[in-house]
Length: 216
Image (tube, rainbow, N blue to C red; front, top):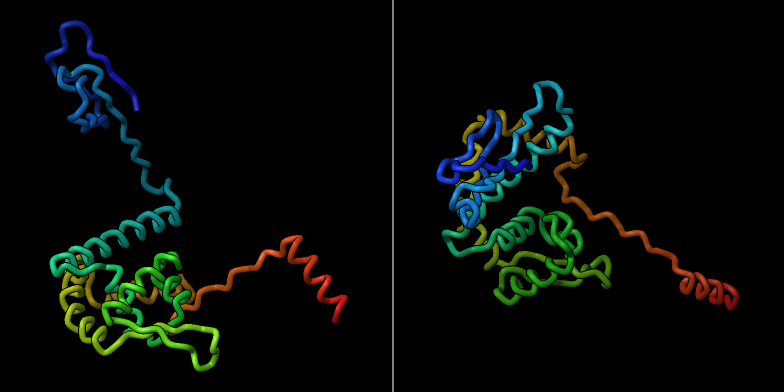
């Protein structure tokens, strides 16, 4: 960012901007009231072909996610609902009982935040926790009948907002985009399982293992 200072007698005139420079939008700056010390910056637009394709994909995917997220959130806000609630109930309704850990991974949320959200959803009667029959130490989360009814009632309006945001793509193009993203992520139609965290062997834990092996 460069700062241009108008010369004497130019306090009542807006500073001239060269091509590519943009005036700062800060209206709360007292100096801008008299058009002094108005900051400007120069846009650096890269020439076509100079930007790596991977960088373009990274930025475009980020903006696309934001576009769809905002469309979905706006549609839910008109109903007084939360996007976090919808995406959690949606995943359970589509994929069946899921562990809390895998549910947090699938929705890109922190496990602690997901735990608090599930407490709220369970209190509202939208989901319930149960013990995994295959592993009694494991808790699964599943959608209730009330939660599925809520999901079926809300989803059509949500999808309308998403369809509006994606109006520039034909149904065939949307399917092709979906297939490319699935290939990129290396996923199939099955729910994604969160990778197991690696346990760090501390000196204390290592010493304890050594003592146990000696007594064995």
